[in-house]
Image (cartoon, rainbow, N blue to C red; front, side, top):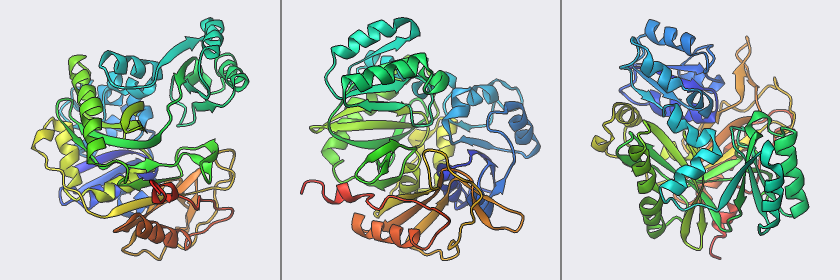
Length: 430
């Protein structure tokens, strides 16, 4: 079948890698894609939020399934658009409609959904410009540290953990009164800080049934030992040793089942992936956030571990037949190290030539994110997070060794990566 994949990051290169390796895929088009997807699929120079142009492409290229990678087109209603058009309404779309995508598009909406459906989460309250004073009073009543979240989409950077009341008050006012995160912080959620260890659980759902995909742990901060500014993600590990069968059973019973039941009960048409950000607090799962797509860079560690046909999974989601799909997993560990441009997550250059890409091997996978090709065919940097290198192995140690061996072969001017990905997992319980 002919498939259109929307997006241009490392997550989309991982999707493309799995899709083109399925015998069910005849042609894969990626809009707009990157240098990595260009090597294995057909990149298309289209905006992922130009819905009429996407529709025209779908019709003229006999597209039989549409897969949406990032959150922005979902929050803007791309799935609704295709469902409402007579010519495209029968094409399976993998990605929730606009109402379901609000679980990521609005932190306040998702917190209220969790509360209505008895999904365990941190205590919180939401404030606007008009209720700044009430918010400042609320901050005074909270324990430290305090979590502040921009309500809307902020590219993974709209969450602040404030260690002092003064810092919390200043940041709260900056977010609401000075639009620190643009329109995303027109509303701010003040949330209780949960102590524990984080992990991400990925669920595929057709709105009725679900399959729990491999879990992962990611590393958000730019600096080693989780210091410095938040980023979109600097690395990931899957599986997660502390997420044992007993804990994952709690996740399924207390989080996944009430979430899927809530979608059905509230008539939220949801065919796609739910990324559940969790905190393991003394062995109990609490939801930090929902995302309405696969994570990045967790996808680069999770998808290689799916053994069963990936296009079959996507089609089962899009057509509402997920109960008939059997999920099979590989038995290896996957670890991903993200390589970024110098200066990220602040300002950074683009257009630096990348060398060392030719030495591919069987123990690692190279996923492009912020890359492009020049006219000579060279691969150049074209974003903050440039590449994600996934090592495979029978243990976390072996997978990390294979990932870093590959990372050390690839270089460009001022390349940066964290050297401590997975170290906390290696030391867990010691």
